[in-house]
Length: 463
Image (cartoon, rainbow, N blue to C red):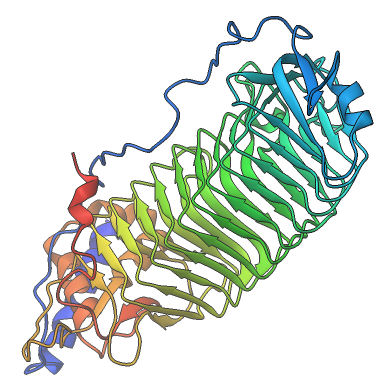
């Protein structure tokens, strides 16, 4: 009986509002999406992860060389190297090894032909001197301890480069330990699926106070987090592909960083941005990130940042914003998520325009106590749930749109009322809340919604 009174009461209130507003331009209600459709996504990732060792023999069968001089072990060659020397790896050599001479290069023919294997304890390659380069080798079989931070490559000196490399059978892939100017590029990092819980694994690339690093063109899977930032600033991470992880990229206490053109899919969360400031998150892709967290982009206690030009597709939440202020959210494609954007914990100060909200089960879920405008002064966003009225054909609707308002707030406060969410009475409430300026319910409102999507290629994600 109580639920019916709620429905009748709201229907009467809406009729009164509509009578007062005769002559106002209103948009017809449209059906909310029943659910986000399936998306198709093929990422450029390696076809296999069980890389064969058969062509390089047993551990220790290979050798290292400096010029024409051959050494029986990699450690002996590295100890003999002078600044500027290249230590060439031939076949399958034994680690661990520490590089204590600056400006030394350890290089192989290719990761499939030149292998450095550890003993499944501790680190495999430790860099203790500046400007050391490791390239074209396969580094494998580090220790299992997360407590001791066992890594395939441990970097403890500035200016290190790890490039064109393969890293497998490891806890942490590359750990950069409080030193600047590291470069990790074109490297495949694969953890251990034998460690079933992701929380018991290490991270692919760990940056601890590793300022001004460059992380580019890497492929990372089967670890805990792909790239983990801790107290690291001035880092550019670009063109990395990250899958089957807890978080593809994870920022903690790391300001003034740029994340661009990365792809994160099939993770719990694509990009987790936490307790950081002045981040630039641009032109990334987050697809099918579902699970315990289920966010394409998680924004928690992050201020003064820009999230722009990203494709957020098929996630539980396209973006989840918690206790974050003074951020720009623009020109993103928010497609086929269960919830396009979830705002909560006072995240009301957002500059949003040019975004395309298409085929989301719910475009917006805003747990806020006030009405929040999501639009620039003359241009807002496209909402596939809206029915725009573009009288002057300028691409902007003359009718406002409120994707999250009276009905949604009522359902949260009175869960029993959800049974009426598709009823004619509640459709009338939506019509008034979305279209009539006299109804100022808490939630998100777009005063200048776009008449057509700002992204004309969104259909490419559908099979």
